[in-house]
Amino acid sequence: MRDFGITDLVRGTRPVVSTVFAALLIILGILVVVYPALLNWVVGIGLVLAGIAMLAAIIATTRQYGR
Image 1 (tube, rainbow, N blue to C red):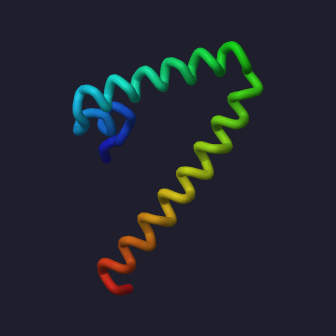
Image 2: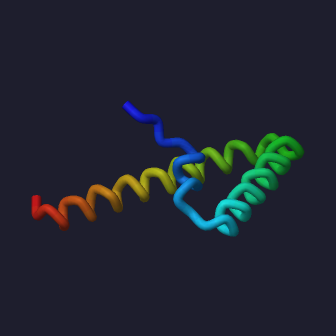
């Protein structure tokens, strides 16, 4: 089984997109170090976005295959 991580996500993008993504991750990391309470918000928002993405993938798959 292959692990799909951030590197696989960025590998298919253009250099500008991957550079901006890396800069945003660095800024977010610095903010979490400076304000540890921010980590709770980041994790919470990440879980909500992951749930929305999973729901959208399920809906798109069922509409495509008609199940």
